[in-house]
Amino acid sequence: MELRAPHNKCLSLELPAEAAQLRAPLNGSIYAEDEQPFSIKHNIVQLVENKQSFDTLAQLSNHISVTAQLYEALWRRRSISLLSGEDFSLNEEKKLLLDWTRPSSGETILDVGCSTALYARTLQDFELGTQTVALDLSYPMLKKAREKAVNEKIDLFLLQADARQIPFFNDTFDIVAMGGTLNEVSNAAQVLTEIRRVLRINGRFFIMFLLKSTNWLGRVAQESSSLAGLHFWTYKESKKMFKGAGFTINRIETKGIVAFALLS
Ligand SMILES: C[S@@+](CC[C@H](N)C(=O)[O-])C[C@H]1O[C@@H](n2cnc3c(N)ncnc32)[C@H](O)[C@@H]1O
Image (tube, rainbow, N blue to C red):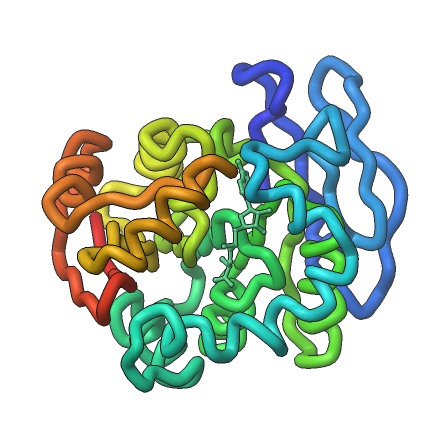
C-alpha cells in the first residue's frame, strides 16, 4: 500500500505487505522518497514525530499500557449498553457495522482512532480479501491491537499516526470506520475533512459517536469531561457538521446518547 509522507504531502512511501502479517514480527525502517526514515516496531509503522503525542487531555490515559490492556475486556464490551441505557451487545454492534458497510473482496478499509482495532478486526475477519489499516496515536493501544489480531489470526496494517493528517493520498479507501473517536479529537471538523479526502467517491463511512445528553446529570458529566477536551453535539449539530465536511448522510440510528451513522 502507498502512504503519503507525513512530513511532505507530495512524497510517498511504500507500506510493505509484510507489515500486515502480524504473526511474523517486523522491525526496521521504511523511507520516504527524500530518504526520511520512519521506524517499524513490532509491525507498527510509526509516522508521528513524538511517539507519545496526544491530541487532547482526555487521551492521556490511552498512552498508559494498563488502559490498553483492559480497554476492550472491561469497557468496550459493555460501553454501548452503559452509555445508552439500552441492551446492545458488542456482537450487535459488530453486526450493525458489517450490515451497513458490507465489505467485499479487494476493498481497502481504514479504522480511524482504532484503539485495540475492534472495528478493523471485525471488518477484516469478515472479508479476508480486503486490505485493512488500523490507525491510532497511541502505541500501547496499537500493541494491544496487534496482540488481539495475532490471537485471532487476522492480518492488519497498524499505523501510529494522527487522524488530523491522515497519511494517505486522496481517494484511497472504500470503507472508513470510526468508533467513539470523534468526541475525543481536538479538531473534529479537520478529522472529518481528512476522512472525506481519503474516502473514495462511492465509499462508506461508518461512525459511532456520542450526542449531547438531554438530562441534567448527563449534561453535568459531559460539561466536566469537556475540560479534558471531549466534545459532544446535538443530533442537529452533528448532521450540520457531517454535511459541512462534504458528506451525504445515508442513515443515522440513536440509542440514548449513542449515535451510529453511515455517511458517503
Ligand atoms: C474512544 S477511543 C476509540 C475506540 C475504538 N475506535 C473502538 O471502537 O473501540 C479513541 C481513540 O482515538 C485515539 N485518538 C485520539 N485522537 C487521535 C488522533 N488525532 N489521531 C489518531 N488517533 C487518535 C486515541 O488514542 C484512542 O485510542
